[in-house]
Amino acid sequence: MTIRGAAYIVGAFEHPTRFAPDKSHAQLHAEVAAGAIADAGLSKADIDGYFCSGDAPGGLQSLLNYLNLEVRHVDSTDIGGVSPIVQVAHAAEAIALGKCNVALISLAGRPKADDVRTGTTPRIRHVAAPDVQWEYPYAIPTAVSYALAAQRHMYEFGTTSEQLAWIKVAASHHAQHNPNAVLRDVVTVEDVVSSPMVADPLHRLDCCVISDGGGAVIVARPEIARKLNRPLVRVLGAGETTKHQAGGKIDLSYTGAVRTGPAAFAEAGVAVTDIKYVSLYDSFTITVLLQLEDLGFCAKGRGGAFVADGNLISGVGRLPFNTDGGGLCNNHPANRGGITKIIEAVRQLRGEAHPAVQVANCDLALVHGTGGQLATRHGSGTLILERE
Image (tube, rainbow, N blue to C red; front, side):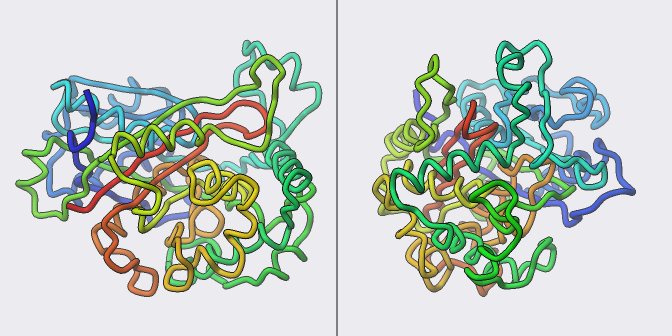
């Protein structure tokens, strides 16, 4: 069985807020769900599948109760910020199996309003986790985990801070056209490398924003999708995996994308060279560089040269990425950026991105994310979407 063509993304909505002290966590979920349902031209009664992850306040059951949704299929897969990307594939699988017809996937949170400093403060996510006793005494924050991966890449391949900075520069060129973006000022390579060091070699501007808000998408059966007055965005292929420490055989130079990319391309029946636009998880600049290499857009170790000189800027470079400004400049709701990656890819395929960053003849897009920490354990998911 394949999910190729089994389902379509028919609705997508990103919450406009980036700071929500006046809204509850559950209210944000409800508002993005309503936005996506309206975008699809459907009603709440049409939803018979619901997907969420660890950002759901009180868990899936409490949130379904709050949303007052009556569904026949649920999924609460949680592999970090990539979860919504993986759940689009899971929704397509469920639809192909007849488990549901119209699936809602929502994500929301308010880390900024709650003053959650996720990047620089050590956190114990699960007290009973088998790795806690070995890792928590060393108090490794998220930024340090990604800095270790960046240091390793620099050591092995000669990657420079200036090359990483080009990723932030590209994101800022896109964010200037997004009225909702947290950071709208265009920055230079010098601005990035001159910003304060957070975790060597990552500077402040190598790091994503912390923001409130969220987003949601609707995935539907083909027969339903074709009856709606919306552009058709077809799910072509997907891949998912996790990467861990392999009993101590740790290699920080690659991510789980080395497995999910080939799986998604094989199912979709397309090649890397066919992709017109990429939405890549950009928790840090190094995250983007590693994903580009592991997905096959450039050879291992050549990511620094690939991203330099504006190669990721829409209308300038050969591979436009994160044309909404991404997590680096626009939005990283709930510190889980997977949903926004899907939403901007849908905008591009529909031709609804800002005219200044809309990719010409955008008919194939790739969405990829990581969830967790690069230096310890992370989930990976790849999704390939097509405009029909």
